[in-house]
Image: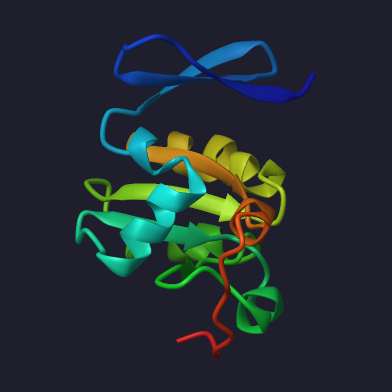
Length: 138
């Protein structure tokens, strides 16, 4: 069984269904950044409490990523969780959204993170006509 995200009316939650289990994440702060144009505005005027997390491999990140995104490759996330505050709002993305959801299901939620959103794939950014930056992983 796969996963999907359901956004309902005006309640303050995102409902993620993975393997038939409903999982809830706070949406009131993060949902406004779901449209690519809103995420672009966030990259131009960052909010300190919100981090954009790219879970693609380092080589993909270095080849081009959304401005201000931090690279936490899926292969390293378990050993780097201590770098992410439980109080931080996290907008997680990858190439298509699948890997981001796996990171949420297997690492973030089990370790007590509740402030996150799977933004989906970086293709949403490029399809909207926005450019990426190519720079080495810090």
